[in-house]
Image (cartoon, rainbow, N blue to C red):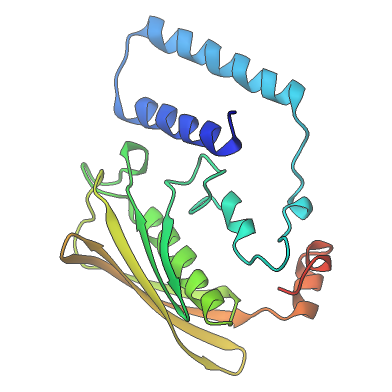
Length: 206
């Protein structure tokens, strides 16, 4: 049985080929026709997934992340960032960025590094029992981050001061730290969630 995850991975592979490989016009034309036909079949067979239907089941705080453009296995835009270890207030994640994420030749575009940090910092806060929305994200790019290399990202909740939540993270390629990040987040209460996301908080508290 083909799942949404299988389809998303196939689209990632397609994107990587388009971004990283030259091909004759005839091959490009055939591929474009096939993609358009596939998109039309999905449009005819499927129904729109409204954001409010992407709800957490039985208090599962991670379900919504399956659709994240950073870590969502169901979102072909995502590399994706994978969560390998989640503990109380800390997470270890990994990601391999392919050709579609290139900035300087051979290296990851800084915007995708920032996006990965934003995702894992938020996850560390969730793991600590302090979910929040990003207020400030500061990234220090220490050295170029290579493409097609398994990167490790460690993130940890640091502290909470009133409604402000603080977390830090680092990204490693092998033994080398390529970037670091500090994040400040604002607490999301149930009332605030209902205000910002009408209907989403009906299933479970945010």
